[in-house]
Image (cartoon, rainbow, N blue to C red; front, side, top):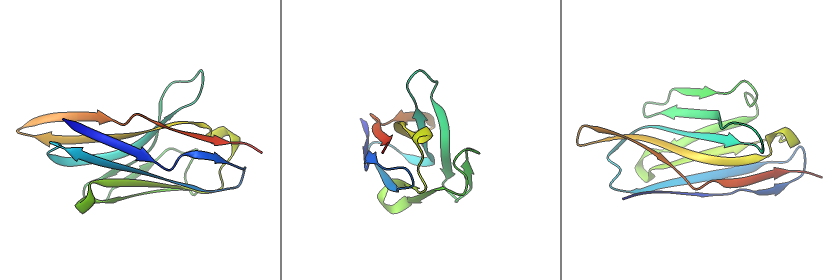
Length: 119
C-alpha cells in the first residue's frame, strides 16, 4: 500500500503565502516524479509543478515566479511554496508521485488539500 499525505492548505488573503507538503510512504519503490496538480470548481485538474528525481523542474505558466517546488528524496517528501497568491489560485491541490517498483510503474495521488485565497 502507498499513501500520500498532504498538509498545509487553508485560507489566505490575496498576496499571502502558503506552503504545501506531501509525504509518500509504504511500498512505493523508486520515486521518479513528484508533483502538484490543482482542480478549481467547474474546471479540469491541471498541472501546477513537477520535479524529477535529479531535479528537473516544470511549472505551469500561471505560477511561474510565484510558486517553488522542492523535494527531499531522503524523506520522500515534496513541497510547494506558494507566494503572491491570488483568488485564481483557489483550488484543491493534489500531490502526485510516479514511481517504479519491481519493474512496474506506479502513479499515486493524495487526497487533496483545499487552498482558498480570499479577503
